[in-house]
Structure formats: structure tokens, C-alpha cells
Length: 306
Image 1 (cartoon, rainbow, N blue to C red):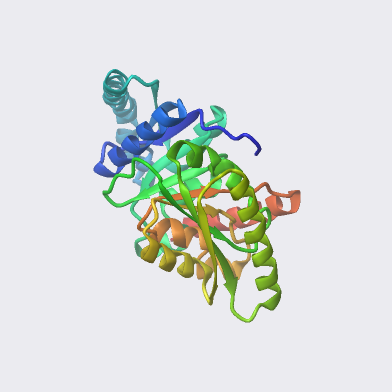
Image 2: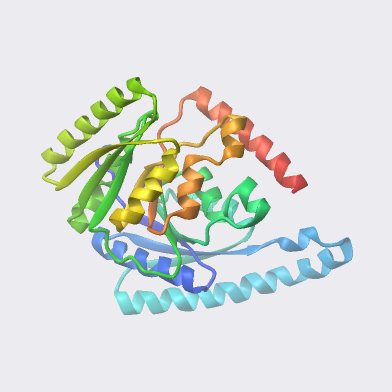
């Protein structure tokens, strides 16, 4: 992850206000990072859920829907190129939005995905997570999720939670381009579960190590250690007080059945934060990959019955 650069940004769009905010954020980042932007629209194949006769009729409309979307997206891409003097490409796919976004990001080796999120709603969302979370869960690169209808065009104040997970500080290398180009200050929040004396010692060591690296980079930072019962709720509470421009999290994906039903740390923050969240996944060991694959299989089976 050394010398990580943001050269290619993927922006899923649906022509909504939320998507436009993501585009504006991506444009601002593109200008600072000298990155290209790819706008992506996914025509969802929802017709497969209908009776056979309806599926045939809807399936016949799919090429027209893709054609129309391609024209509209091409027009938007051209307007942005002319107005902002940046490289803007576009692609239209059909299928499941989260799957297609992740597949394209992998295929084109994207450095960052920027997208909006409405957060969780309803029983199905409780179990399976929003589209944004599903992208975070499966994307091959960091994902920046933007909540609500606000626009964030720079990231001057960054909240940097630190908790005891594998490779907890790897995310710093990946956020460095943003720090450099925005002149950001960092607030390091060491998060410790209550009644965990070992965790306190290890978390303080992580915070100290990170502060040393940040000082060497001549970045302004402050740090504090927090005790809590629920790590995600603590991070969200800190953000409500500090009102950062960006929250940077290590997006570990809980793999135990208990954690899955209680609601993973990453999912809670992505769905409920009122500020942009940059989710960065650490490198996984072969055992972790197998565990996550098993849980993904279980998730798909559960989704089929909901």
C-alpha cells in the first residue's frame, strides 16, 4: 500500500440528487488528484422476479433501456468534460447494481469508488445491508460513501478511528493522497471495549505508532482513547460531536453468525453516518477469505427467502 495513488475513480449514478452529489465530490477529487472519472449506470434486471409472461415482455425492453441510459449518460459525461476540463468516461451495464459496480471496478482496476447511500431501511435492509454496503463488502478498492443531500468538496478534517483489527493502520497509507491534496488535519480516536485491559494497552500502542508516522508527514493531529460498549456507535457519536468532513474506517467484515445478526461494525457506520465514510479493507489471509466466502454463501441463501 506504499505510495498509494488515486488515478481512476468510479462513480455509480442513477440521475438522482444523491448521485449528483457523488459526481461533484468525485470531480473535486479528480482535479486535486489528476484522476480520471468513469460514470456507471446499471439497468437492474428486476424483470426476472415477475411471472414468465411478464419477464419476456420486460426482457424485450432491456436493450432499449440500456440504449437510452447510454445516451443520457454519454451526454452527461460530455457536459462534465467540457465544463471541468477533466477526463470523464461512461459505461452502462445490466444486472445487479452492487455486483456490476464491483465487477467493473475489478476489471478496470479502479482506485476508488464514490457513491451515495440512503442507509438502511426495512427488514430486508437489516439483514442484507444497503446497496452501498454491499459494494463496500465486495469492492476490490476503497469506497467513499456520501450520505444525504449534502455535498463534500474537500476533506479538511478527518476522523480516524483506530481499533484492534488486523492491519489496523494500513488505511493510513491509502488516505495519504487525500491528506496531502486537502491539507487535512486528523483526529485519531482509539476505540477500546470496556473491561478489556489488554485492548487498552494495544490500542494505545497503535495510536502512538500512528501519531509518530503522522508527525513525520507533518500533518496536524490530535488523539484520544475512548471506552465503549459498542464500537460503531462510539465512532458515530464522536462524529456527531466533531463533525468531520470524512470518517476513515478499516472495513473488516464480521464473519461469525452472532456478529452477522447483531449488525457489523462497517455496515452500521456506512448506513448511519451523517458524514462521508471512506471504507478501506485490509489484506486478507487465505483463512479469512474462506470464512468470508462461507458467510457470503449463507447471505445469498438468506436473501433468497426474504
